[in-house]
Amino acid sequence: MTSSLAPPTGATCSPLDLAFGQNRLLATFDRELRAALEPAASLVELEAGDKVLTAGQAVERTLFPFGPLMISLIVDLAGGRSVEVASIGKEGAVGGIVSCGHAPAHARAEVQIAGPALSISLDALEQAKHDSPFLQNLFCRYSDYLLSQVMQSVACNAFHSIEARAARWLLTAQDRVGDERLALTQEALASLLGVQRTTVNAVARQFQEQGFIAYRRGAIQVRDRAGLERQACECYAAVEGHFAAVIGETGQGRAAEGGCG
Ligand SMILES: [Zn+2]
Figure 1 (cartoon, helix red, strand yellow):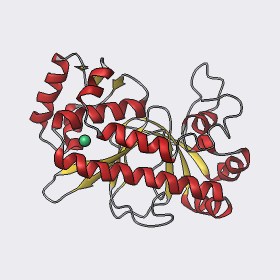
Figure 2 (figure 1 turned 120 degrees about the vertical axis):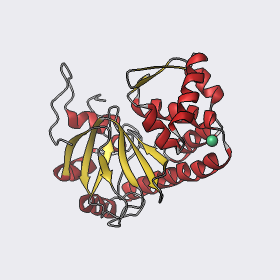
Figure 3 (figure 1 turned 180 degrees about the vertical axis):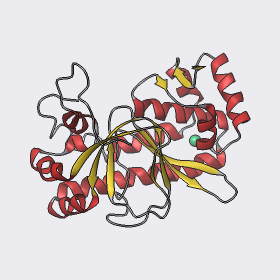
Figure 4 (figure 1 turned 30 degrees about the vertical axis):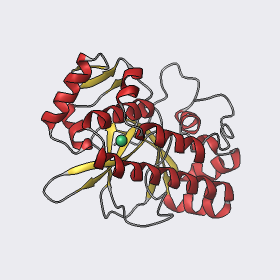
């Protein structure tokens, strides 16, 4: 993890403007809220495999991803098994949102797709929530959305086929990353889905034969999103629909002055 972020070549927006323009939660902040939190914020660049939180760790900061960054919440079980229960990208935030303050993390949070995030101290966020009913309401709504992801994952992992779950995961990842190319190995995907690598290999081969994806040099290229949508279970639409219902266009653009993001 690095804490400096060079302005993108040719960009007219600062990295801070990009964060407040691209992250769906930050984009709802007005000038006053942004000004109150900027002194407690820093930009970080995260790499795939970075462990943002480990189970039991005290949460000190909240990360607001932007750009292609995607972070998974993963539950580890005895015997080395693990499974992803939720994923977070520029639509959300990681750390201290649901618990409403300092509490140990329950799941491991690990970066799957590299990218930048705005890191804000939890103390400053808690104070801002205390002062702003808007922010309190926003985080409450986002917590509801995050919980919907976890609830849907329970049902999905119990009843839906690995093909449907893999298609759902790819659609969600593409939404988070905002690109057709997903820099992810089949080994990592198997771990997130809680299955053997050979199982994911077979599904990836099937999807390639169907023309849904191409797989080369450790990256998945989504080639037929509509095909993946047909293959995915209902869980993808259910979770996206809940996001639209509880977050939707809440205050969207309040801080997007300047047209950045
Ligand atoms: Zn499902």
